[in-house]
Length: 122
Length: 109
Image 1 (tube, rainbow over the protein chains, first blue to last red):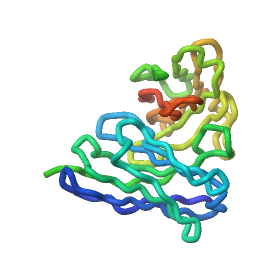
Image 2 (cartoon, each protein chain N blue to C red; image 1 turned 90 degrees about the horizontal axis):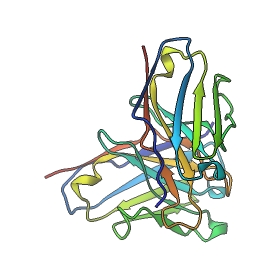
Image 3 (cartoon, chains in turn purple, red; image 1 turned 60 degrees about the vertical axis):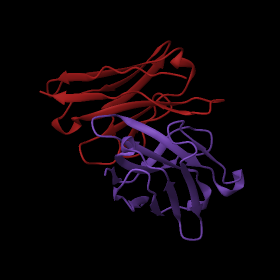
Image 4 (cartoon, rainbow over the protein chains, first blue to last red; image 1 turned 90 degrees about the vertical axis):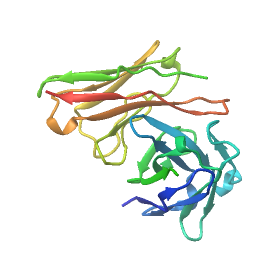
């Protein structure tokens, strides 16, 4: 059974950093790209970024709203994807989800975690 | 950048058919995907590549995509279908490839 579990959320002051983790199980983690998303209070889903699998260079792409502040990495030996969030702003307050990308080229996300809440406030 | 437009809300009585639309410029030329998110839960993929259902998704859920509109249809709506529904496409050759619609809140009367 595919499972994704996010952790690392919490209350953080503006300008500070936070690192989220997404621990995966039930599939060969290294074969899949992994994505991060968020849903701010009262808003819809927003894509944050993704990281490709090792055969595709482990390169990453980001939404304009977080580019230069957030970075995604992965550790295939422990089946964890990370979201490093720097220079946090109040508007980054949201529930953050990780998701597994569907097979290469399909463009959808077939499994998601329950999410972890990040609150940016002084 | 590419924009997907969804109506904010749709309401139907139990047993009726709910149709939720997703508008986008020539969206029929792209693959549209749909997610269901119930309150406090993870999003769930309910339709992928316009009209395919993942394993475990009831046959009541179906999708279509043509022209400028993709549609998610839920037949025989049940109380448990009450949720937010999001359409999504992958915009190739874009620095922002993953596009979501704003979401439609389905209310079961």
